[in-house]
Image (cartoon, one colour):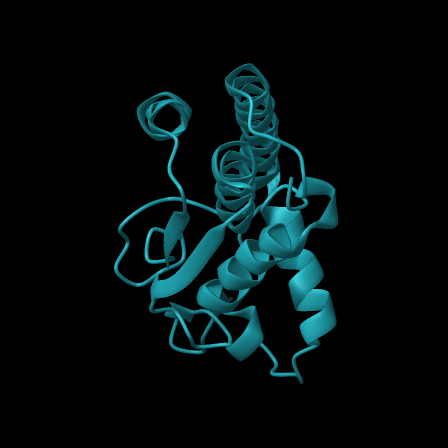
Length: 169
């Protein structure tokens, strides 16, 4: 995104930055159009805010365009990605800070390295976890038992989602 979009856009010097904020590229979107996480949308938005600060005195408009995973309410991928996008738009530390290509590249490389470390740790944890053994029935066949159903703790679920995505970094 840095070399193919932001650098040419900065060279163009727009009077206004318009973001078509589509979230169907989220890893959990049913269209399976991409593999982006909430933190990726937040990073892209922050970079565009910086570009707007550099080129057009912070003039920026964002329009919600897509994203189809709405099951789960505010914890759906659409809700979380949109919240990350809005968090970057509202981040007061980005106001007045112009975009810089070199710093953008460094942030991107740092994020890629952190994601690689997280994926490696997750793969290690997944291979060490064993599946529950199947129950043996009286007739000798086996089947998995149903899990007991409990109420959903949405606070804990949000913490689990953030942990899976590398803590939102």
